[in-house]
Structures are given as structure tokens and as C-alpha cells.
Length: 338
Image 1 (cartoon, rainbow, N blue to C red):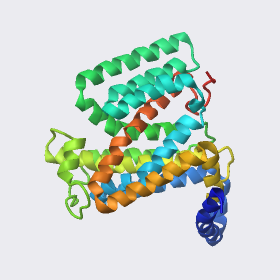
Image 2: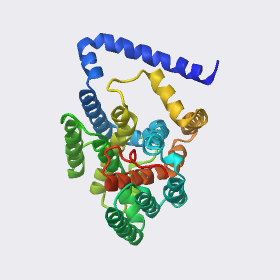
Image 3: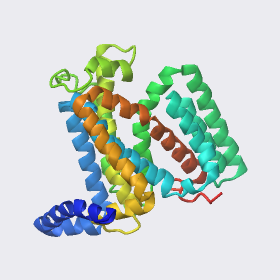
């Protein structure tokens, strides 16, 4: 049995469940399948509400298991939609000017490297000289501030990169209606509620898995008192879960050329066609490897994943830069080959 046949066999049970659910929900399922605007809005609402539920009930579990279970698939989605589908992987200048700083960022873990990737994206973008110079000035100013701020800039970006994912989804493509504003409004209201302290009375120190609340507070809100650090940890837990949902569910729906969804089998085949069989196999091995590692040492597996995943925030910065200077709702899709 060849590799594609194995993928088909693995996806078939999911497609069977999907068909039965579609039959069970009848006209409602038909409406969602036929209307992408409604389907994405419903998905967006479910992503926001499930993320909020996890953040206010079992935040330490979510923070521990989210990266282990969803981290690698969401990195694959990042690479697919921000690097491969735009065709940047075919451009030597992109590898040099965006990929080079990303590699440095993977080693150093610093935001400044990501801003150099953004500068590289501006350099290869299809835009006017005036826009290019203006964007490079903004990026240089941000890099200067990030260098002066040091570790604080990295903490701020850890929170901000979750918001960047939501912003990229919002700007991904032209829309016919305003259905997508519903999950956006819910996300904004939930974020404000968590930061304002409406969840302060909840027992965050309750059921725990992996690193403690104190550990997360030291990483995500260093120097703040217990009240504010807890609020920021809950906000990060919520926003990170939404971030995963954006790349795993919402962006794939938005980016697909056809209006209706694919089967799981067709989606897997399309992913292999775009990535290549060996990169797909490596990603699959990484998914399984992180989970197995977590069985033996959850804290180290989570830390190992997060240390490697630094590059994806820098890739998102580069995508934002390309979008800003090109004015393309498809982010980097309009960039010409080098």
C-alpha cells in the first residue's frame, strides 16, 4: 500500500462520521456547506466560545496540552498559507531576506529577528518606492524600540502574535457580507472581559496539569502583581486557543478556491501535493513525537515545542508586512516571482 493509500485509509473514518453528521442535521448542514460566509462565521463563534470555556475552566490544562496537541499542525498551516501557497518558497530572495532572519530568530528567540524578516518582506514586495521606504522606516523604528525594551518586547509580542493571527484572518479575502464580524466582536468582548477581571473569582489554581500558574505568570506577565498576572495568563490562554483555531479551521476555509468544503481525504491529498510527501511525513512524525515525549515529560515537551515554534511568529510578522505594503487581502499571494 503506497503512502497516499495509507492517507486515504486514515481519513476515511473521519469522512464517514462527517457524512453521517451532514445527514443528521439535514437542511442546516446543507446551508452551512453551501454558504462559506455563514459556515466560517459559525466556525469562528465556536472557536471563540470553546477557547473562552477552556480559559475560564481549565486554563492550566489548555496551556499545557494545546501546544502539544495542536502546535505542530498549526505550524504546518502557517507554513502552508503564508509561505508555500503564496509561492515564497520558490523565491531565492525570500529565503535570503525573510528566511535568513527567521533562522536567526529561531536561535536567539528575539523579536528583533522577526522585524528583520518583516523588513525583508518589504524589500521583496510588489509596491511603490514611497510605500517601501515608509514601511522600512516603521519597521526600523519598531526594531529600535524592541532592542531597547529587550525581554519586555518579547513578552509583549508573545501576546500580540495571537492578535496578529486574528487580524490576518479578518483581512484574508474580500467578503460578501458581515457575518465574520460576529466572531470578531465576540473575541474582542471576551478579551476585554478577561483583562478587566470578570473571571477573577474563578479558581484558576484548581485542576492543574503541566507548569504552574506561577510559572506562566513569570513568563507572560513578569513583574506584575498576582491579580494582573493571572488576568494576562487567562487572556493568553484564550487568545492562543483562538490563534490555533484561526490557522487550523478558519484560514483553510477562507483560502480555499471552492465555496464548499472538501472531504478530509481530499484535504489530506491537497496538503501532500502542496508540501511534498517527505515534508508531510516529517510533520506527521513531529506531531506523534511531541505527543509521545509529553507522555513521559509534559513540561519538557511543551518547552521544546515552544522553543522551536518561535519562527512562526516571525513568519506572521513578514506576512503582515507584505499585506501592509501590497494591500493584498491574500497576504503574499500577489508577490511576483523573483
